[in-house]
Image (cartoon, rainbow, N blue to C red; front, side, top):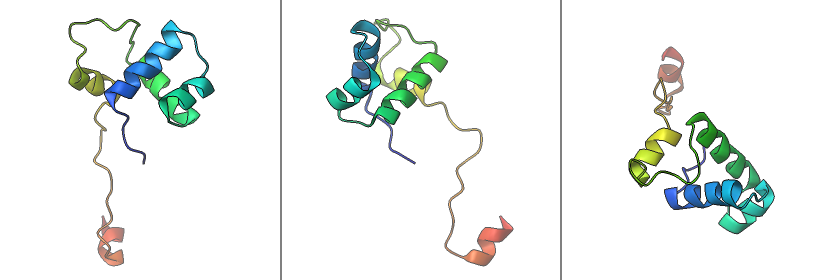
Length: 89
């Protein structure tokens, strides 16, 4: 699983896409991430119904992160290293 993007990079991806109408490859090169990361970020933004420009109020970095990275329903499975107990889980 990849690490989350900084909200600074997320804002830049959204700005380049929605304001400047750049393509995903151009955005990826500019921001320093892969084009699939750009695509994932844009899908998350659409799912969260974000618009550009982001409203000033209510969209600080913490709120933006909560909108884009909703908590998972189930905790991620983390193996313990013990094959027998991992199978029982």
